[in-house]
Image 1 (cartoon, rainbow, N blue to C red):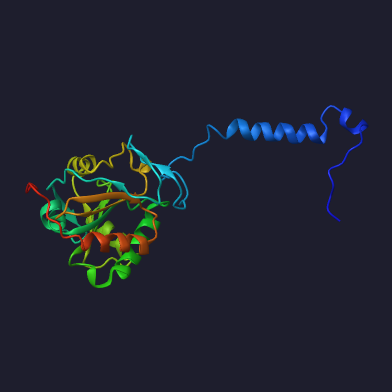
Image 2: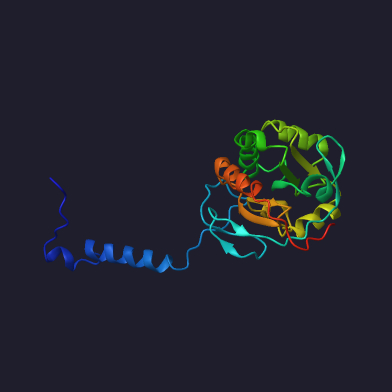
Length: 238
């Protein structure tokens, strides 16, 4: 028999009747709800599901499942170092005339960075023949003073990083320049959020998405970018 919430009149005269308690609980929920807002997951948090979050460092708020347009980014041709110790120019060697997925990680992160690494590992398989030509994967360390090329190589190996996935470090000054240009800079590594930039350099089409987006969805977005061959009028070389 279902439980019925029935009380006699005498029961409701007490200091806190069941009805009053339920009313108070409802009021407390209504009082806290309007101001409640989930904070963006960062490296202080446990790995989060791809739920709604705000972009860090003052960026426009957006739903994590959606793509935020980021066209017109200033893509610097800064010289960095990959996981094999080779000097590479970010724009000229890895981005120019390509479709790119780029995330931002550091090897001592124990929360959102490992899931993002695992996502790129699976993304390699999802992309199939698209990977390498025309699609490249790039991970930029946001803690370059700690993340040496060997550390990045070891970190990438955990997720099966292949030849078409470049993991980059460099001087803090150069890396900070890149992060600021791509609008993903944070004062400390622990404050960064899960962000992936997807772009087609030929068409200057760039979007910013949640780094915890399923790899299959990232692959579909990259495939769509790769099939867009519209030239960008007046696009300046760097």
